[in-house]
Length: 104
Image (cartoon, rainbow, N blue to C red; front, side, top):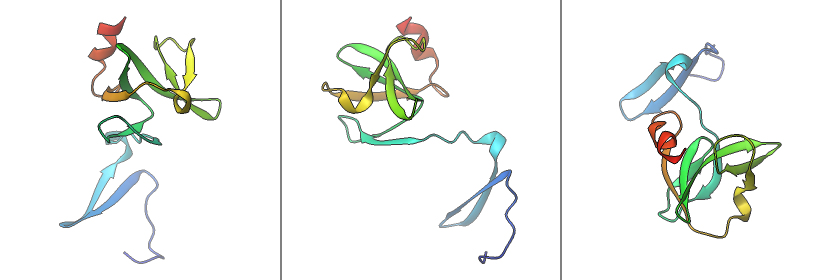
């Protein structure tokens, strides 16, 4: 693919060792990185379910900042950058939503 080729806006093209892969955006959920890593070195993304100090929370982007939503109720937030206890990413709201049912 050269710079001037048209890429449809509704497709995502990724390159890999076997050549380009085209995925429809209906099959893909784009997740924004917080640029932080958990205690195991795993990158933390918006939508991740995290465990911290024996509590579970969801990482969200709200009012221009990444926050921890402790009850997943959009009511109690803490800036993720101010958390002083170790955080562990244990799943995400798209693939592991059953983890949230346990925390309610």
